[in-house]
Image (cartoon, rainbow over all chains, first blue to last red; front, side, top):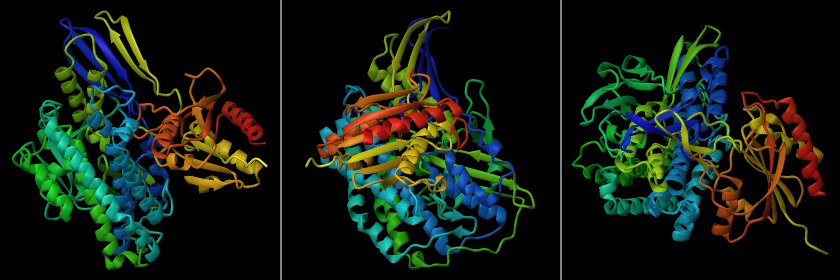
Length: 476
Length: 163
């Protein structure tokens, strides 16, 4: 029987509206911990009636962090609804834009947000457990990390012509070709930034050796995994079929993205606004799965770029080739994907079609519905539109990356709380570990607003009768 | 003759979410006073030069790279929205470099950006944060009536400082 309830609201350093409640039993041990996501966007409702071609400009407003992912998923759904296949150069340019987003988002997460927990220690003084502490510990690395994120952002700017809210991808292709000078400008930053990513990987690997005991007890649990793959099951972030594997790595399904409703269903819990997707055939919760870097590297069997593949083999060999279940290895997987994205930038820019001006197909064959799927930095992002004969949206369904990971994040919070919280007096380091279980997934909730005073972090300690006995507040 | 100080005015927030985007409206108001109206459709991040010494910068949120920009200025004015958690309608506070662990993964505060600037580049501008009460954060390009009035006041206050 729970005698005390501790609420952490919101989780530090994640977008959006979430809180954690930890119920303690009479012995002061964790009975159960919950992650509640109070997310409501309403996008699915107010987009009804809009024109299909407007959607790539409307949906990026869902998120200030990964607008490019929504932009591209939306453009792909628009391709399907209008029945138009983009010319190959347009697909290459879209993927190049996407790689810029992966580099900037993953780079920022590891070096500036998730990294300090790892590199400075979960129990380090919060005053230094941040990127400034990291700068003091390794100023040269941090400058390179800022440059890495900037390079990713510059790719977005150069390719799309805008830093925020791109208007670049349109159903049928893109509206801006790449010139030789811009290609060379992007390429000029390649070697330096690949080196920075490799340095990050070396640092993580070394940290993982020292902290293996912690890694092996920090939210380690079996689930299924899901992600896009190439035709021969290589890592894929832009196109391809969706592959699902079970906790042993055995393939469950590999299907065209447009068929996702045949395989995925969503469960509702009364303590969270965010639904819990699962693999239909196994039911809930047996069919829950993880997406994002950890999920993708468990779903793929190889990576088609040399440096990332070499690191991937090392990564998968850590646990005898079985899927990696350790939540903290999201960070390792994220770095390997960053390396992949940088190498893909190189491959795409070397492609003879990348400078082509054949970037838009206007021959349409409208369909009543269409699905666009992309691997956003945080995981599989699904846009599904239904349209009438005028091209107006009549219904839409969005499954965002963080939604797929909802069960995993909740379970990680529960697991870490039970592992590390040993009594009613919770230390700052213990709380930080619980929060880090969520941060590892790099969640992106309803993240459109960030006003001052909006989200102080609150920890409420409640007794068995529901009386507030302690409140901890950490202001933003 | 004393060299004029370089000033950067940084606005951040989401103009698609009503009062959350008040900083954009304030920047647009200031730019208009300088005879350089900013078009809503052209909202873009990055610098706009109002004069040789006064520059605007806008983004949906603060980002690490802004630390590099900050290091090039002697004064900075940050503009943001605030909720009822702050009792003043318009609050002007001096900011010192201090890294603050934010509740958001990809979110930095003004003090954190100054801290990055100081630590990475060894210098930072003398800074204030002008925050304006938001009343309505729903999906809209328009400000609520109350915040619209506050934005006008904030523009006047900032213009006085610039003059």
